[in-house]
Each structure stands twice: as structure tokens, then as C-alpha cells.
Image 1 (cartoon, rainbow, N blue to C red):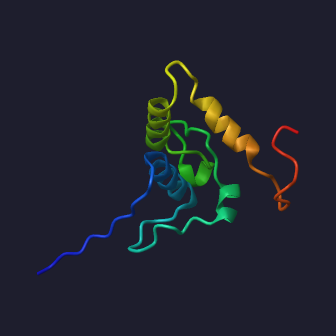
Image 2 (cartoon, rainbow, N blue to C red):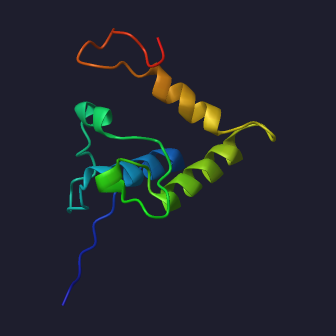
Amino acid sequence: MRHKNDYCCYDQELTRIFVEGTKAQLNKGWVAGQCDDIALSDLKNISFRKCLSSESPIEDKCFPVDKWNELNSALKKQITKGYDASSIVDSAINSMPIGNDPWGARVGD
């Protein structure tokens, strides 16, 4: 009897962590062959806020604690020692357009 395993491969560690945390928030499982089922429109439904211990990524729209910690660790490996990795996440969030207008106002404007 043969067993078949399917794997999703990503070009960067950060991409893998981002996808895993995002899928957890969107309640998207891992179906064979569906490594690219996160649409650009899904990004408006995710948050990079770290879940509190009592929160659920799906219900509370927060990044799972294990993935948040893994993301921060991976970011710290790639940046200069002593740099606050949370500012990169904040910059990414604030650079995303809000609403339906892709060229619209930024968060905090």
C-alpha cells in the first residue's frame, strides 16, 4: 500500500508563517493541492494582533500566539540586532489600503 503526502512549499520562512497564521484566522484548512487559497480580498479580514490566551483566531480576528511568536523570531533573525520587529508589522498594516478603494486613505490618516 502506498501513502501520498502533499506539502506546500514557500520561498521564504516568513511566507510560510504568514500563510499558516492567516489560514487559522480565516478558518481555511489544509486541503491537498490548495496552497494558494488566500485571496487578496481575504487580507481585509485578518489582523496581525497577537491573540490573548483566552482568544480564538477565528472568532476574535487575531494572529495565533504560536505563529505570532514564530513570526517575530523569524523577523528578528533577518534584521539588525536590537531592532524592534513589531514596527515592521505595524508598517505593513499601515501601508494596506482600507475600504474598497485600493488607492484610498491609509490607516491612521
